[in-house]
Image (cartoon, rainbow, N blue to C red; front, top):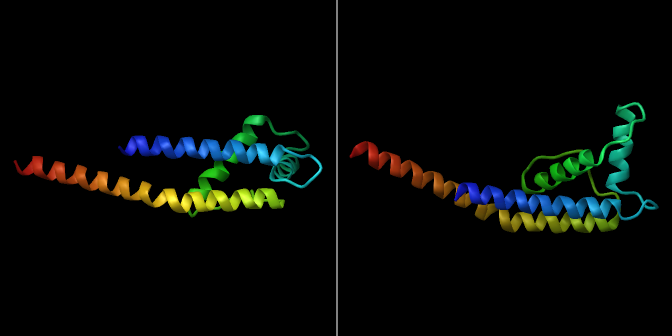
Length: 120
């Protein structure tokens, strides 16, 4: 069950990351997290543009940080991104506690099973 929960959370993070990337790439005219990430990358790579996988991994990193107390340098740059960010945070508030509870219960059951086997 732990493995299935991890797969579910990773799939959800992938979906959240894909929509975050689409939202950030929607308009070149307004500031967006994609433009900010490209600019930061180009400053550190002497003008070389980032590849698409870099932007996806950045979006995935951002999505994972919405489920954990971690932070990163990618932030919303316009009102649509900010609203999506809030939706992702509220989604994580609803989904992450049952995930942690399930893992805790699985580990406790595994320990009890091992203890019972060692006593037998």
